[in-house]
Image (cartoon, rainbow, N blue to C red):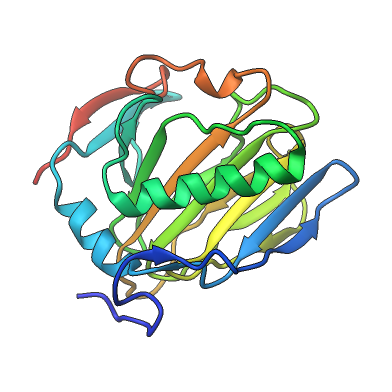
Length: 226
């Protein structure tokens, strides 16, 4: 069972009065943090994790095959988001950034990443499908356990930790996916599950250039054990 906070329980919904704390990474890249923006995330996590269709990816690394230490599920653009709360969050963010950027923002499909315990993780990476140099958005809703979410300049160096809690939203914008990278490292203690829902947008529609199922072409995908 999840250790529930007061905000993570209750009826799912978005607090649309929440304002962002903006971190300027450099003159072209920024991160917006919306703390306690979404209610009812623990119940939503449990329902989403109970749904079938979770996949794990395996890729070649040097002379061996390595399985990604997390589960993933993808709903391509045009498909129905798998929970009403995710629809509400997406519409809220689209409205916010359409106003801020003075251009219509419509996210692509939603990706769900399930970190089952502190042993699951994702290494340093960029969302490289987003190629627009000045404007792109990656929005991530966290549900479940609070754990590190680190951002650093591409190639190495010191990092910042956004440490989103259940119901927090992180939005990486500007040239963040060109010049910065992010990671969810392993946690060396007992910790509950974390589920993230992420949406992507770029004005050149590079966020729509996926395979039909949205999974990385460098991996072989198979269903995880239920």
